[in-house]
Length: 243
Length: 206
Image (cartoon, rainbow over all chains, first blue to last red; front, side):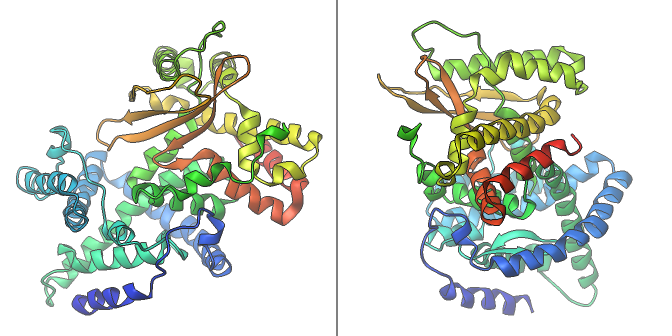
C-alpha cells in the first residue's frame, strides 16, 4: 500500500505552483476561508483530545523515556535529512546526517540515545519538503490540517512521501501491522506533547491565533529553505521620512 | 515540532536583551552591545531567585532598568503596521505603540526564567563606517537541543544609541509575525479595532 502512496505523492508534484513565495504571508494563503474552517474544527480537538493525551503522556512517562522516544523518531528524520541534503548537493549536511544515523543507530541503541549530538555532530535539519523547495516549489498554498497543524501543499506532499518511505512503514504483514500502528501512534503522541508546549507560548503572544501560527510557520520554512522574500518585505510600505 | 518550542519561547524572551548604561557620543559597536547586554541580563537571572520564580515586580524592574531603554518601540510598531501606520492619527499611533509595548513586555516577563542555563554566543559583526542599520547574529545553545539562531536588528538613533526594533528567532521575525496579525485586525475592525484587541489581550490573564 505504501508504495502507492509514495507514487501518488510523486505524481502530485507537477501540480504544485512553481513560483517562490511572494513576500506577503497572507497572499500565500489563498485557501484562507477553508483553512479557517479547518482551524475551527481543530480548536476543540486540541483542547479535548491533544491536550489531555499530552498531559497523560507527560504524567505517566519519565522525561528520560520521552527524550528517548523523541530521539528515536529524530534518528529516522535524520536519515531522510541526509537523503534530502544529498539530492540538493549539500554533501556537508548530508555527511553529518548519515554520520549521526550510523552513530545513533548502533551505539545509541536504534536511535534511543543521541550520542551524535554529544559528539557535536549537528543535525542537518532537512526534509523532503525543503527538497521540493530547493527544486523551486513555493509555499503556496498554505494549509491548516486539524490536529496535524500548519503545513503547505509542498510540505504536506514532502511529509507524506517521507512517511511512506519511513522504516516504520516497512515489512507490513499481518503480524507487524500492529507494531507499525503503535509506532505511528507514539510518533503522534510525541508530536502532540511538543506541539502543546509550543502552543502555550503562542497563546501568550498571539492576538489572532490562526494568523500567528500561519505567519510563524511560513517564516520558519522560508528561512530553512534559504528564501528571504518575507524578510525583505519588512520595509515595504513603510516611509520613515514622514516621521 | 520540537525545534519550534525553543524557537518560540526564545522569541519572546530574547528580544529583551538590551541593557547597557547609556554611553556618550561614540556609539558602542553593536555586537559588543548585544554581548554585554546578554551577559548582564543572564547574570541577573542566574543570581536572583525572585526573577527565577517569576516575581512580577522584580521582573518588571529588570526590564525597565536594563532592557526597555534599548528598544525602539515606535519603529517596531511602525514596521508591524506597514501601510496602515500612515492611516492612523498621531493619537492612534501613540496608543498603538504603548499597547504593543505592553503586550511584548507581558509576553517576555512570563518566559524570563527559562533561560538561565542557556549559553548565548554573539557572533562578531563586520560594520562599515556610517552604517545606520545592522543585524547582529547570535546563537542560543540549550543542552540536548539544536542551537537556535537569534538575529537582532538595530538602528542607530539620532542620539548615537543603537536600539533594537526586531528580533528574528530561527527565521521567525517578531515584526513580520505581528504585521500579519495587525493587517488582519485592521481589515476586520479598523485601527481602533486593532488597538482594542491588543488592549483586551493585555488585560487578560498574565
